[in-house]
Length: 485
Length: 97
Image (cartoon, rainbow over all chains, first blue to last red; front, side):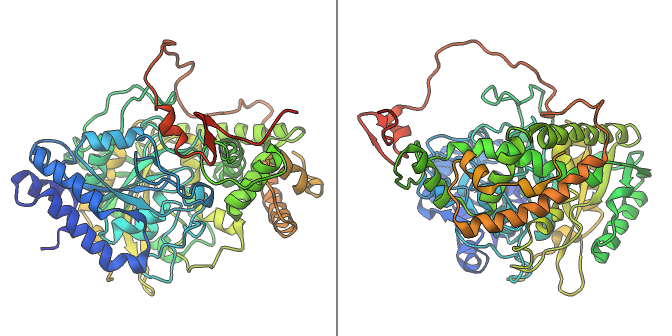
């Protein structure tokens, strides 16, 4: 039996009955990884012995057979989230050889829920990118077409879940880094409301935008993962003390009577024609299921990418100042301490990270601060207000996740601006701080590549987003498709 | 907004960022950022004179806690990742004469 193809819910049912052990579940993933990951390269680090030892401990303790939400389920972790005793490099040379000395809050939560921390997945360096091509350790391939990118920045996590190399994986989403790769790899990727999931132990990229979330094979698994990850953490001052509901509780209610908003600004010229057709078909399906479709407007959509690239790079330039060759990572000797900082950072960071540090430093520098950074923050207010106004007319918003499907490796590496524009539909969500999911809604014809549907909700209304997503998923077959590897 | 992107001095900004760049890197970044800055200039189209800036999207303000001693990661563990360390300290190049 091929356990690796199961969803978390299916696996948990078998574990609970004692039909399989945590060791068997872990071994089946290790076998799968051994057979396909030399072609995909989704994982950066994996220790089979350690994973099996964790599984054995869970089997001995009986955790897999009790009610723990993830008892005996192996989970993959993006290389930007700290797991004590495992490497954490953010796919950057500057952190080569770095071993985490503590668990991120979400990792503590996974351990408490009985999960096995399987391995580290590839990403764009410091989560900066949309294709995972900015990893210092090599590219990850899209499981549907090995010549294509998996999306980014959490490309390794998305590819691992889509290729049944993981039952679920954690990612981080600053401008679409969970939703866009989920869309391009054909799995479910959830970005929670800012403040819903603690960022403690997530290496910071842009602190006002970053949020951790899960990749899963189904929406129900995403709801389960979120229930484990969400909740108040005093170690993150932006973590919001609100109760965590059972996100699957309203699944039975379907979408009847819900108002679904379609933002007219999200159906743009130059968008992949098949993406548009699939999105419109999905909207029709939601209508058939009883949802009311209303046209809405998000008038400042066109400014979101510009706002994002000023705010995210400004915050990144400050956050990445800590990588200076003193407390961790590599060091390159210099004539004095300033020279040592510069040489260490010059040798340790890759081209995209350098580009963003320069842009962010410039946007914050004397004489330009008001013109760039403060102006971007003001337009951020307008974008946030767009969503507040829209949510007076609707309960959820539906859009394509990305204007395109997976593109070919190398196609956009020389044109950063073109790469930035592939996040045009996901970026506003982080600026507004709201929540959203991407789930499969079709395929292009030739080549056959997954298309993602994005569903957005109000701040802290994860329940409605997941409810709409689940209703759509259950009424279609897209989530059952698997790549041939 | 500063439209004059010709003034963009990569060398100066790289020094502010403590980031050593080669001449080739400087040229490439300068030309790519010129495009990016021209793109973000579209924010000038909007009148934001009466708009308050948004720094973050949390509904929280002034999150306070008691100032009390709590356990933290021990020194030896933290020093394990240091590029250079001795006598329970991080070692850096001399910074004072």
